[in-house]
Image 1 (cartoon, rainbow, N blue to C red):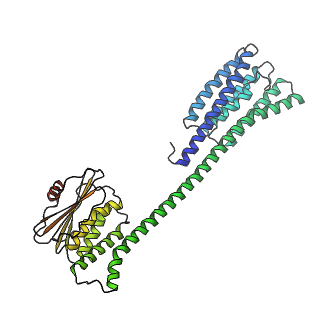
Image 2 (cartoon, rainbow, N blue to C red; image 1 turned 90 degrees about the vertical axis):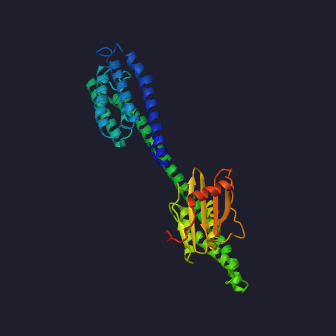
Image 3 (cartoon, rainbow, N blue to C red; image 1 turned 45 degrees about the vertical axis):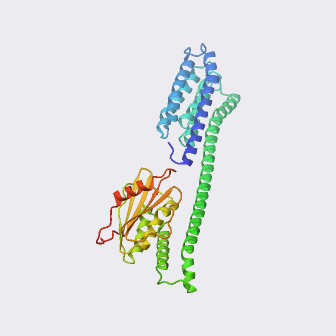
Length: 399
């Protein structure tokens, strides 16, 4: 079976042409050759030899058609085997017919042999079929010479019949191959146009993604930069520092969003953790529990945004946990951080839960494609089961 669209089209057209040629050959053998063979039954010497050869041709044609339609006939073996058998039939029918002439209606094999040769050599170069017709013409000429009735009229008739019994088969073979070639070139052109269109769509998508990312980055930094420019922002203020940390983490996350990695979510959480570690916070980013599915950028942003908020306020240590269960993805973070003044939403199909135990802040984002989300109590218990508490002494962050 062809494994590309172009090869598939070429294969289908080639098979269709072959089947059409088999139908034409069958029709010729039954509708044209059989009546002549049956009508001259008693005229052959020995009697019925023409019908015997007709049956032999029919059996040979069935075998050849089965072999070629199943993908055979690509080597010269088929022609080497079939050609002597067909030429022998031409000689026998011509020699046993009443007039011993290849142009006699009872010498049907001279006209029918070309159809069987065409099927047998369907997948071979055209020169081999031309060679067969040359041999067939030579065989017919020998039969004509042995008949003893050679004159200008018989020679002219022989030339016309030889031309007629070969030009149809050659035309069908060449026409089928030309049609198959045209279909392949058309499929190649369409495939090339499809590739160009896909590349254009991909380029537009990349450009749009870059534009959105650029707008997001500009929006994240514009307010702070404008405040610094007009001295309306005090860098010593804790709220300003919090906003700066959040902006830096978002920038780092946006930068790595287009990286080609196996687990984009873990990769982006690593970028967020790096931003916190650069200011001395020990971050323990644990390996995911379960296999993280491929998530859209918007979903990953919804899952990582609460983590950014908590890490921005973390004082000394934090732990990030990712748990995947069925279709649900849960991202949890625990840190010695204050509760955010603004609760960040998780976006569509996502729920954010905050909880506090002493100086530790728990935050969890639960994403599921369905509209039914677990309750906050269930989410919190699920978080505590897998995330655990932070150690009293900060551990070395896992890179």
